[in-house]
Image (tube, rainbow over all chains, first blue to last red; front, side, top):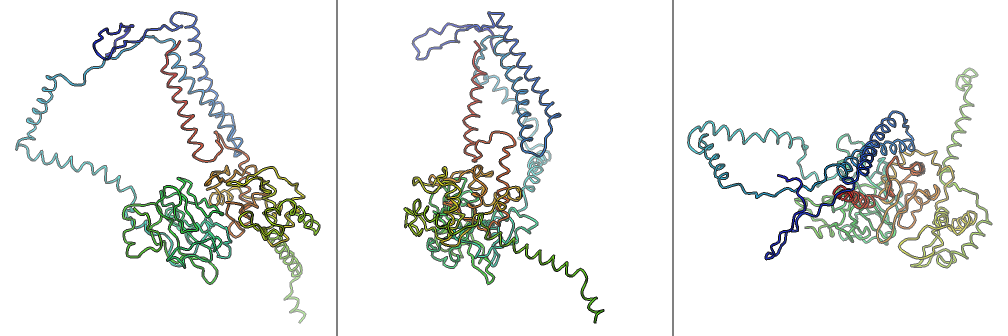
Length: 357
Length: 260
């Protein structure tokens, strides 16, 4: 319960304890309490604030009906600014007005809420326990009576959550096949195509210093799961001076004359790693600044990523087009449970397993 | 025989032949102008003047024969007129001081001198030419297509609307709103500094113009709200936490404080 009008109380005077109750602070009357003019002024201020809100609402409606919005950016901007300001004043006027009213004109008394012990009285506790016992006795749950009722009740309660859970889980998507993460659209012979238009890429087109953002040929024609497949299969294709490129052991035939292809999905949490610095051959992930050294097997040189980007083995066919020799030799993207399950039979060359936890 | 001839040769054949010839010539003309177009015609005296300018202003780093100096400056043989026009036209060259990245500044030469320098460097070896005014005219491009290409190839560094952004160790991708259309085109073509090369096989000349049209469209500004430099989540988060939270704290103090 709150006690009203509790005035400044004398502090407790016992000095033997360590802590002294400071009491309620001294009550300082407001100007609007003592001066009727100030009260009148505060009233006018509150009314003015509500008036601003009214004007803001009217202005919002006027802008909505009167101001034409065309496709031009300038026109959209004008409408947005007008609507934003008028709506802002409409809401702020009510809020600030209400607070100002409460602060200056409503009764100014300290309110004290006494704190009570949380524990109920001993009689209350004993009574509650007795009630539970009586109820259990009455229903026969604790004895051998009414077995049919007990059995049906337990069954009903036990299966009731299924009515909620089964549709929920069922609508989460049918694909529970974790091994889908292990494979991408890349297969032996899939040609590399340009993102977003799907044009095929010839090795001769990839001049030194070039970066191509690559999708597998055929992705643009997919009818289903296009984005899911793209999210796994995107590749960054880079050509550097072959003298700058340190080819990793076991991957001697994975690149072509300085042309090298890596998965674009960061091994940290899966952002697209695409900020390539041509001079340093560093590839930077914009999300958490993981930096990969493309000239040295895309190994991590900075940031939270744990392992190098998976490399896509590429080669060039008779017509000059670049194609994939196979899928990635390890799952792309961030770690997940069972990530390397099934890949141990096919040893991954180079340092791809380094730092795998 | 006469009857046969009349049957075989239609009266309109000469007209069609001439039209076809004209069309073929136009196509060839377009193809030629598309690949090797020079903004201005180059004379031998331009090259000579350019060589003098080069010897006086560039040779101390790039060498008298423009072959470069190991560890200091690259060779300029084969970089083309586009690279010279970009580097000198944006004031990046001649370089004032070394650092993580060569910075843009007021150009040191006038347009004529830049053209002479470009002519000289272009004469050293074949390289990309300066694009014509038509190739960089945003009115001829499609901003919607440009946005798609920009999002795939450029937005990761330069931001979704070309506001620029940070790279590693002090390097950064500059914002593109004050860069001239010709310089944007040339940067794609030659890949200055950290920027990769986007040759005509990767981003076709038409798509380069579409990108320019998309960037030009950004001149119309934002459809509303503070842009905060459009450099991404860092600036926006800073404002959200510092300004937004600050306002909330200030208003709680106002609500809780006693009136005088």
